[in-house]
Image (cartoon, rainbow over all chains, first blue to last red; front, side, top):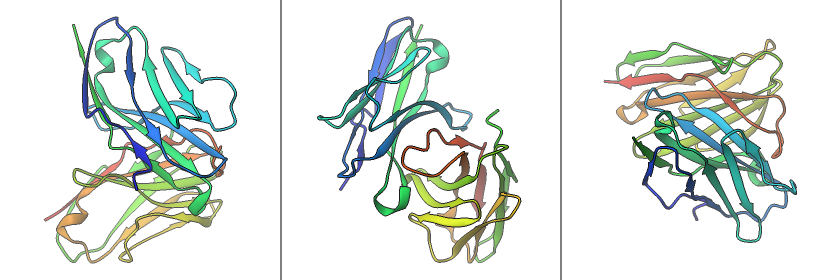
Length: 115
Length: 115
């Protein structure tokens, strides 16, 4: 079964607007970590934001925030005030205790920011 | 620059050959992770080492092996290479190793082409 689901293969957003990238996950572990990474066309993987399963507050890092809804098992990434440089592939990932802390990545969402 | 280094950046080799990919984690990080990114399989977790010990295994083929040395650098050995092994291989590092270990920082990757 899919552990991490990103249902949006591609998305467009107008520059300066906010955009939400969806991510749902599946785990029975009470302890897990959720991550978002950005992969520009140059290929490197850039860490954006982290949310622990026990964290009470949603994580924020600059223009990035993670909308963590534990009961719904969703961890959506919100990018505020989109910039042209935000055009990239975005991956949601989860690390759980079961199976020895493997990190599982979703299929990714390609974001296009329009001028 | 994440602080994680990988060598070589590009590698072209023939089927049946053996190659070694090298990774140096960020200063102070004890965990090293290896990932394979291909067009058809996406980002796949291969293996995780913490302070020299194997901690988790993912979708790593028997033809592949890895180790982490006392100075914490890691090597991924790929043998009897097949065309399907062509991919981008990432190394990542983090300070600790649990589900809530926080972010993993990725190296620039090694692009392996098997001809």
